[in-house]
Image (tube, rainbow, N blue to C red; front, side, top):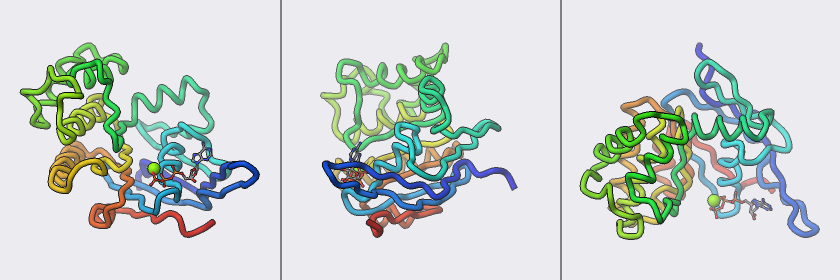
Length: 224
Ligand SMILES: Nc1ncnc2c1ncn2[C@@H]1O[C@H](COP(=O)(O)OP(=O)(O)OP(=O)(O)O)[C@@H](O)[C@H]1O
Ligand SMILES: [Mg+2]
């Protein structure tokens, strides 16, 4: 059997808040194969974003291990130095956030192309155009984020998350800031692209329907 894309084993993370040490994540284990979807739910403060940060190597676990298996290599973000971690994140992961996080002074096209340029693709503009086209944004490429609707901004963010062909997309409530109809449409498009290209998704969501649709589900926030 091929190694899974992601293996999380016994991960724990606590934070000091004043005098108190709060144990946010305790003994978290899960795995994910290429092209699969892992959904993460839990009340506010249960550690969903904390776990995504650990997966992305933006933070280190206090205990346990995170192992990515991508391009026939094992990556444990906690054992990489800063430069290697940044390189890993940039090359192999894509991110979609609740509040889109587009660069306001760049056009839709430039926002997407930037990510491809950072990864050294010579044809960054072409790739960005093609991604935006496929997400129905052919007419909005030269628009600045502030003039786009929420749904359009999130499509741009999805194009940006995919333009460098990452193995996995990490999404933190990607439809949390959209109305139901627009959110459903954007989410369906994201899933369609991921399925067609066999990319995995780690999805933080408050939506029970979206959470139930994954291959694996992690419900956080019961332990304290
Ligand atoms: N760097 C940090 N320093 C101290 N406390 C932190 C840090 N990061 C997170 N926390 C705390 O850890 C807990 C979990 O935070 P996290 O952001 O992971 O929650 P969440 O499940 O994503 O919540 P939400 O649904 O509101 O986004 C919170 O109590 C938060 O204040
Ligand atoms: Mg969060």
